[in-house]
Image (cartoon, rainbow, N blue to C red):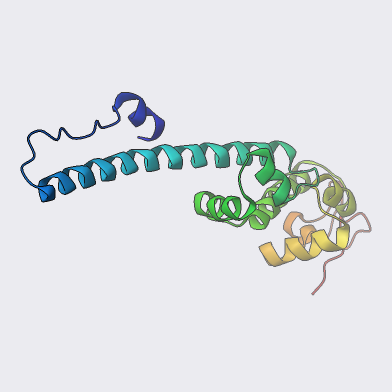
Length: 170
């Protein structure tokens, strides 16, 4: 549907008035015409908003490690801040901050799984403010701390080694 529907659908022409017998017939014809025109314009508007949100999400995926605020992103896609916030949540089913947090958590899990980096470096490379903030967010989202989620660093025999990537808090 969306923009493709508008490209293949002609804008309705106003109803011919010669065949209308009464003012009521004229009123109904004009009302129907206005309703159909509004419906088509709404499809166009929804498609434009969807495109802007998709552009914002793509930008966010490419730049989530940078310090990005919702006001910057709403300006980038030329949308009002409040409208952007509402539409972003509608299309992604998450608030802007939840979506950004989840991108950072996904990256941190990848780094924990694929590298031998210590927790403080993982936090920094995943775009978190600091290690303490990262550990709190990670544990809240996953019910375990980052070190528990990956276990001991490569080359260690047990979880008691000093080469663990983090200290587990109870």
